[in-house]
Image 1 (tube, rainbow, N blue to C red):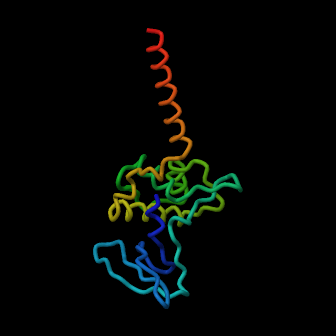
Image 2 (image 1 turned 45 degrees about the vertical axis):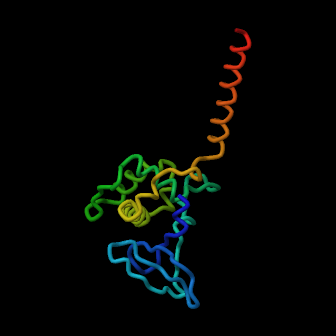
Length: 165
């Protein structure tokens, strides 16, 4: 989910934006919709990079990164989340989000936050499907080490059998 460092939400504007490059008076961004409009966002605007956003959990010392939530949502719901935002109650939002992240803090995460996350997921899934393809950077280091250790053990076991024969 390293690509999330180039995607931002701008407070007061709908949708998501790709950060193109910094300028003298702010940042040049491009919309992720079909129009691909470019605009300069002033340095006073509140720009939130998606890579830096995480969701509160019940453990006060821990939070879940937005990238992990997007991957879990993709795994559970596919390319698009079909959810009726207009008629859903707050408890339905919370129940839906509990299927994705069961340990989120229901007191500090609001229904409006969940609605934003789901709409961002749908936008990213349509505009940047490559975001959901696992890369070596997304694989935890422990898993890589375990695979290498297993290969060494299997290789050693095969060598031992050859030595016996």
